[in-house]
Image (cartoon, rainbow, N blue to C red; front, side, top):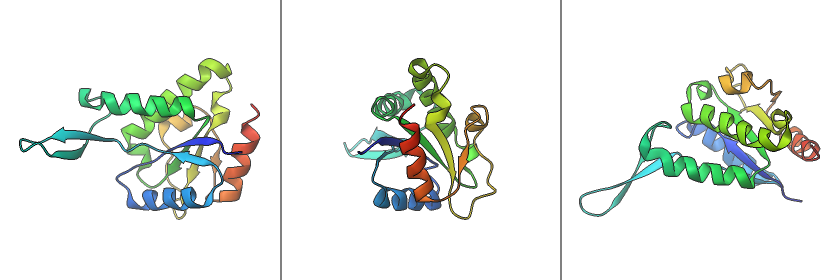
Length: 155
């Protein structure tokens, strides 16, 4: 059975993009993500992607699209790299996923959220939103990730 998992990571970090693609290609679960880019229409009518800030008014459509994906996903995994703890989008995603899932799971939403250190970043600082949720961290191991997804799906 395929379980939908939202993957949060620093989209500006090429190492994390590569890590996500490795996971996506090897897991039996459906991994979802969302680019934090906003669209800007230029004078000539062409569209340019720009990175928008999480609290910027122009990011509202991006935030709404992410919330829709959260509704379809039962789990959240944060890929932790060296700079992930500085990414406002990652913090926003963890906090909002937790808030949404906690409403229906009555104090057990943290069981659906994990941080996963990407290979070579085992000593990286985890985002504050993960620290405040007391979620466990996973090492870079696909088998461990899949086992957690399947076991926590019964919660």
